[in-house]
Length: 427
Image (cartoon, rainbow, N blue to C red):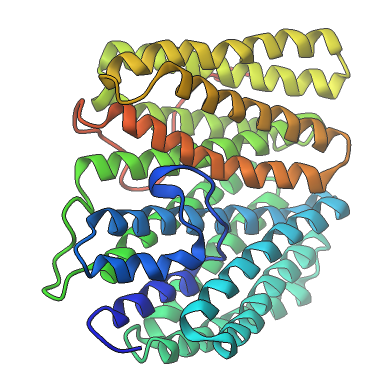
């Protein structure tokens, strides 16, 4: 692979190698590319396609964040004693690994893809081993997994450095993947110790960290030969789109966590709700500049009622209360229309009420179907719906960004998750 943008394509794949297993995106616009298309997008950027550079950034952020969430779930499963849930979570991660192997193979060839497959699977297995040992209070097993993971980080750094012909130093790669691994270990430790607040803080930190990494390293991948970033790469509209993707993706994942905890009677339910509330406050902060104070307050009210209705539905599912489920569903059914009245008026014709309502209806259906499947013990279906639900939130983020871009420079949290109350405050 030679030429001025060959190094960019190699670096971009190294970003994925450093931090994430990949999943395909299903939304429109900037999020429509599959992982194997990323290298082609970088190559197309050499012809001045700034939109493809932004697409690279947003896609990497999405994929890196998803990996962190899926790994957290796999490691917590044994602590909760849910063997079937662990099997389904493992399937989701294996699917991601397959997607990433395809991406690596498309750039470096099948032998490199096979080498990566072996090493990445080792990483997933070791983290899964740690989660199992932690659930069993097996100090020896935990120590062995930690030691193996420390050695893995060094070997992984060497592999990525070799693939990128030294563009990423082995020590830097090893340090980065080690930090990511220890975020996951610490979050699992907190969960097993019953410190659920710290566990969900750790989950949010691990997730947000992947978006920071995605922006930094995709910037390096798509920069010009002069070292300058493409026009619009980190402009206010791009920052708004990135923040919305991160926060809405986190919203749906925390909603899955909270509803599953409610249905199963898990002691982590209150902490999951607190994390979901904190995410709500971050969403409002990100939208404040684009919406204005009055509309932001109305958005906050509608969004909080949406979360309350979702949790009420989960409680009703746990209680097998069909009447309460119907009441909660009626509240959820009102949510798309309410936001559909607020956002299109601000978009100056860029989006329609119909498109907003359709996207949000699909979101609610995914939430309800996944918690119902979970309550029935159909963990594979629940995971499949959650997988699709995460991807769908980036399509919603795209729709919201289309509606809001140009209204004002948005503000968004820059240092990871914030805290605050929300629609579940006081529960």
